[in-house]
Length: 178
Image 1: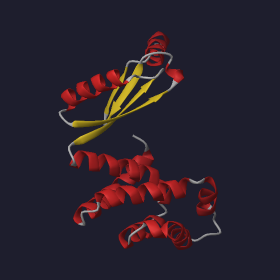
Image 2: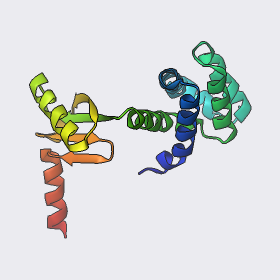
Image 3: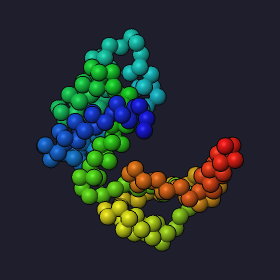
């Protein structure tokens, strides 16, 4: 687990708790996604990181760009992040928020990364197998990564199943090095 994820956890939990308290889980998901998109823009990132800008100015700049999309609690959340110099954590906060939301809704977000395209029947089989193993509803997304050479990697919450050729080669290389 990265240090950024560890630092993001209390903020993600606070955002999720606030969203639940006001029945705003969906809108908070959308607001966080929008904040991340804006704050991750290279030009905005450079401005937010500028030492010429105070933390309060950085917060107000981000709020002014996102204003139409944010409610008052989200604006205050940005101010809190800026005050604690944590705006950079927004992508990790969003990921953790989505994880907390999925857990609360009894679902798990899973990802299949494969060397080549996975057809719909295979995705359905993987979804069903994960559903049985985890005992939860599974939201599965798929992407390709030719660097895997063959096979696939499946990530679902804390579970990682590496059935890729690249993973096997890495394990073999490690074993031979010892």
